[in-house]
Length: 540
Image 1 (cartoon, rainbow, N blue to C red):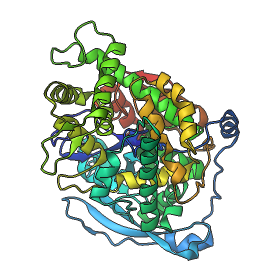
Image 2 (cartoon, rainbow, N blue to C red):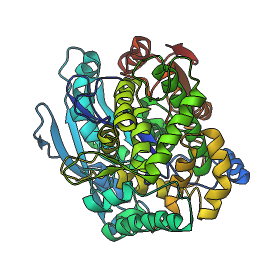
Image 3 (cartoon, one colour):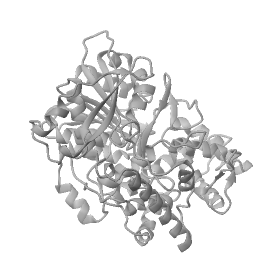
């Protein structure tokens, strides 16, 4: 599952993931699947016994004292330097590759900051993470958070980001080259027969083997627990007694994990678009599939109010809109559409599905989606949907891909056991996924298979996070969030001993900085004055 945060704003660069508020912004948010490689949102057995075990298991806090073997890491003095973006400084720090064997080698972590300029008393550092896993926190802070967060927050906090291990500037995992990724993303992930099933499995194997060949040692040490421990080193290196943090989407899992491991060092934590760490992968993927269906039905009701909706007119039900879209996907499965690209790329069913799902993250993209669907369905021009899909995968105009999807799989497949182990298991689960979403269910079920072929075994399991003794933590949930269903926010708030649940009644993925003055005022008051909201507060 890929979880990436997308703010409500106009798309100014042709791709959903490139957005601006006061400057260009690269998002990273959560998508449980979509196309071929957005498969494992996280992994894990889906049995009732596994779920029950997770409800009993809880993340155990680490000792308060720093182990002697880690003292040198905590005592680092970063050498800050300019990094090509006005107002920002960058540095590299080290963390142990393996916390169980600190002498076994290091991993280099890239850190960026923009110092607080006042007015007002400096409150320390505010770390931000946009999700993924695999989203670049440095890209996020330089392109959005460090210039687009409320001025009063930026005035009193140093805005800080660290790319987690294996991500972007921190020893990035690489699995396939550009042409290989092009083949991977267009692979048919709704196989109709044994030949197509074998082709999908082969694509997953090739992707996994590429990751294993690139980073055989690092691939065993990119878990969320290890990334959370890295954040504590960053906290100490920055000179902060406690960690202040805003995490979106997958970033909520990272932040909650930090609080569970270091409850006494958890400062003001905002977890926006929350994940539920107690769920195994199949359950996570199934519930996220239902979340995308909820978002699609909202889009369908909005679409038919517009004269340019190619999926139906006024009075057309969401079910009918869904059937029209599904029929369009099936048409593409038989005959992909032209896109007019120089290299002759065509819009396949999988790429079109990814484009539609990408637009579900932000209702601000619905007009763009209507126009793209109109071009594809009425003019056989798939360029608009391909643009949305390329934006989701972070493919550039020259055919290169960021490391987002590689890191996404690397973290997810290590954090939890696979959702499915065989194609037969997927086939048996198809009815449940298709019931959850008649439009997306089949593709999202098959997309949950990829961790079955991962080159290293998972080290994590589903578990509760309680963080007993932590200061108040604000958990934010959006009622019609497609990627992190609202139920997950309620579940995480129910686990964290000091959580305050803030609900945004609306569409889209995450809530802070996306247009709700109520949400923004509430979170700003918490970050600036330490005043958490009343548990259960609702905004619209």
